[in-house]
Image 1 (cartoon, rainbow, N blue to C red):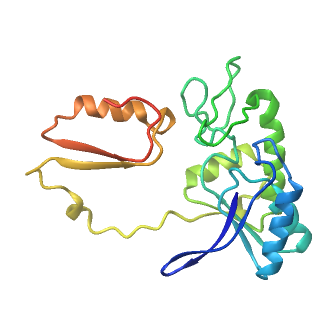
Image 2 (image 1 turned 180 degrees about the vertical axis):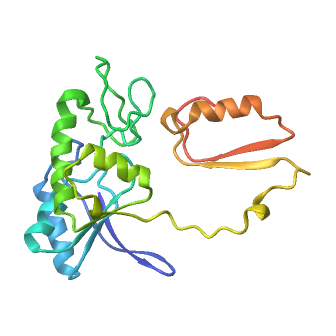
Image 3 (image 1 turned 120 degrees about the vertical axis):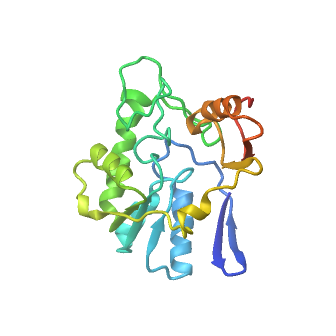
Amino acid sequence: ELSLERYEQQGHLKLATFRLAQPITLTDEVNKEYRAILEWIVRQYSIDIVHVRHLINHTFDIGYFVEEEAIPLVLSLHDGFFVCPTIQLINNRNCFCEGVCNEDPEDCELSRYWFDEKPRLKKQFIPVWRKRVLSLLEKSNSIVTTSAFAKAVYLKTYPSIDESKIKVIPHGRDYVEIDKLVPQLTSPVKIVIAGAIDEKKGLSTINRLAEVLPKEFAELHLFGNCAGPLN
């Protein structure tokens, strides 16, 4: 199911809902039904510019469509998804790979939350994936990411992309003076960890913190799902 929403000051306003006959899978490059929905949205609301924040559980139709219609496209490189569908670029050894596959026969794990279909990545789906992504990068008028390191990883993976095309815009935050952020240790420090926590997002580190931090010093508060046991 696809939902079209408009962001307003008071919240999200749902404009339309679309149901696909078949769910989109990771290996789908295009989908006629999905493409028709995109075309309807763009024409119905006279869209002048398209910003792709992410394409997880979507196809690459948007790149082909905006190119045909001469609509400017801004692409966000939110994480490692456009390098490898593992998303966080954690390989079969549970190490950050920077998008460089090792020669181990064991394949890397895909998110069970996002993907039902799990193609063989190394030397099979990864070259296909990167060919599709490169085409999308080339079709983009501007590309945005949030750190110089992320930009470097993408340029290493796709060296043909013009470096000046990728702009680094850090996440917006308003911080008070750093000395005002230092907690007063009259009570335990409350540490908040938010997100879908698994090994790729530091589950072992969280468990280690729980073991070594004295209870009178710190409290760990988790918000979100956790794919594993917690100490």
